[in-house]
Amino acid sequence: MPSGTLMDLHCHVLPGMDDGSPDVATSLEMLRRQAGQGIGAVCCTSHYYASRETVASFSARREAALKRLLPALTPGLLRLLPASETAFFAGISECPDLERLCVKGTRTLLLEMPFAVWNEFQMEEVAALVLDRECRVILAHPERFCAFQGNRERIRRLEQLPVALQVNAGALLAWKTRGLALELLREARFPLLASDCHNLTRRAPNLQEGRRTAAQRLGPDFLDRLDRNAADLLGLAVPGTNP
Ligand SMILES: [Fe+2]
Image (cartoon, rainbow, N blue to C red; front, side, top):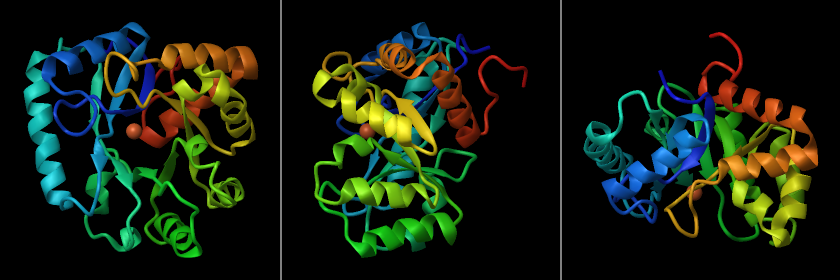
């Protein structure tokens, strides 16, 4: 059985896939630390850029990375769910291979929007993902896009579709971004918290610390809400309940 029941739904833990873990040893240590924080399921959300490779190529690389990692992983330590952090691209709502970018076994897609002012075409594409493709879209780290004029309001509009808002734990831990991160979580219709961990140094697994701050500032019941939302999107049992 996995050692923990929490879920981390945004992690760059697969070796050699992107700017996350460079090798199996780093991946194993990242996962060991996550298990130590009570995490029992990890979404392997390596970056996917449609401008750089096909979904088939990405899926094959992801499979190979998992095959290198899994034999070295302590059996039952935690569950790895193949997924992606897909960067927005024109035509995403009509991508025939979209399901392979979702968290395996679900229609849940972690979407990274452009680092720019979002235009109406992009907003329409996200709406089509939700309404036409029936994807459950998680907007990755919305706090990073709010500095672009009008995006805060556009995030509010996307929430009505609905899309889920996944704030990074690191944004709660840095004083410069804490206020915005708390505001986004507090106001979100469907809030989520994840580590977006990349390595063992500047972007190490930190979900536990982020949860502590969330509990202090938003109340312990808020953690239950975060956990229910994550479990719902991943199709897993809610922590603390019998499956
Ligand atoms: Fe990420």
